[in-house]
Image (cartoon, rainbow, N blue to C red; front, side):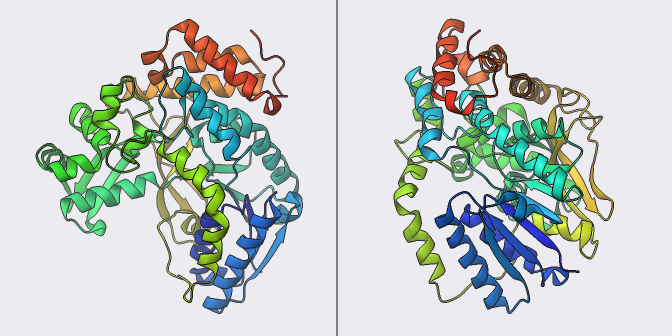
Length: 443
């Protein structure tokens, strides 16, 4: 019987296009049904046309439907992929601009700190509604989330459902590829262990042909200015912490107190390298605001290309589905799950990112023991702030929102307690239309 894949937030054109393409590279999924759902009919139409182009180009016997009805898309699904953005860019921009007014300079703002926490608070009720629908109409589906903030949303959902839901991020495999490139190594000759929390995991093992390559990488980063300046923030963290982080310099600069608390540090570390645009410290927001005016032209351009790319990419989703309900080829990857005996020195129950294996038995996370003590100090702070924010969402408690942001490393490096309180109150007011599930926005 053909498998059904539901895409919730299918208007995320690139994700939908790439994940459908990947799924169709597996022979047992060639006749799959792709049910696309979005709240924006125009974006949904573009996504449907893109999937149709893939099906035609590959001569697949698959079918695609598009609907504004989420339950219709989910009904009977074997796999569910979530790629939503709650509130849009014009709402998200305040997550960047309000902290900036207080001196908290943020680059991406989709994961943690004041920006990530408010993005989470807006998104959480919608994500829970999606999972409640899954529980009713496809309770055995494998749910893979691509929506940020990954750890916050996954931890929030995993506390409240028995549905198999985990989050996927391309940072681990992307960084492994980057480091292999630094070494001049073939990726198939690399083995590694990467663990922590999403966007703040570290390669605690990185072997090349069975030998520890971390000392060699450290020497390259320390002495090759081209390699160092490819990722200046990550290079500094690697040289001073001893382990390479999984997420880009742009993200990492806003998760710790070392790089964005003074203009001279921003100028030194945060205006070149991956994810940066010289002189524009909030580059990601500027890029997305620009896309609001150009996305239709970009979609049309891609849809009118003469050739359609049918080659499989590096995202994990298709391999996971194939391992669980395809041909059952086991697949190793990193996933986001609650910490029950997986990382000994991070909070138990917190959402962590660890190695896992997908098979006919489902998704099985692999315990990694204890992280190096210095990494545990850094990651514990972020993980515990995230747990406070999840508590805030579940309980509708604005005071816990304040507490979660009060201990954020970058915010606390820049602001006093009272200034942080003012910042949080302004962001609560800005987001009040999305926070009707809170019993009060005052404390």
